[in-house]
Amino acid sequence: MRDIASLRMAPFRRSPTDGWVGTLEYPGYRAGNVVARLDDLPAVDPHHLYFDLLLLDEGGRTRDNHSGPCPAIPRRQSLDERSRFVRLVAELVRHAPDDAVGLNAVHQAVAVMRDRGVTPEGLVAAAQMLDDASSERAVADSLSDLLELYLGEEEACRTLAEVVAGQAHRKGPASLDAVVPPLPGDGDFERRVRALNERGLRAQLEYLIRTVGKARVRHFLRGVTDFDMVPRADMFGV
Image 1 (cartoon, rainbow, N blue to C red):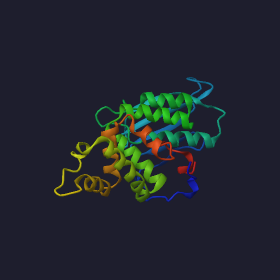
Image 2: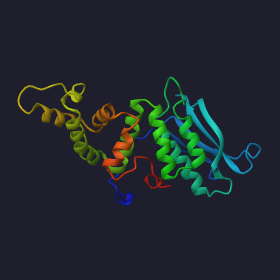
Image 3: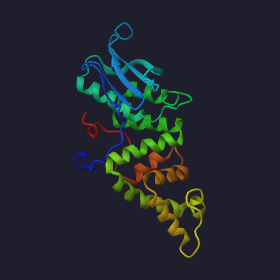
Image 4: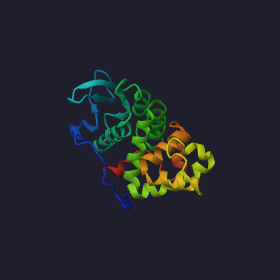
């Protein structure tokens, strides 16, 4: 597994509204238009903290929410672990909400993290549920963010170039038709694969999602990189 300290940090695209909210004792984190936060409601659960995931509209008002006791965070949990929990939940679900159906795609995944916490295994399980329920665009956004943060955009493109070429050879020329139409002349197939890779990380991911399937592509990428394809606390300094 790659040492985070050695990462080539990309100029990472973040919303200007991103940042910490709440208090030191009951932290929250805003990632895009979602806020993950903890609270203490002993009348609801005297032993564990309470968790809210809020979906905000353009004016910053709550338009949907997922809330409930958080068995993964007992009241005695350290402040650092509380911050780590809300940051990783927010980062994982950042792209999942849908304009039409709100937080419908995230309820099952967030329930898993409330129960199991943000261990690597819990995050992997939650990410699979999110990919199953989210749009292809949301899956591409999530994977693009992670790869850029982990590898840097240029290195991510180079890493995926070989993966895309291998997938194109397995799936055949027709798999490229929607992305790069047939080209005149000799060497058409290899030139089309090269043209796809030259279009950048987003085009590479969209091709892999189309040919592998959005529910399988994160697992597929874990098999061809040394990265588990979920947020890690040391990526964000928490």
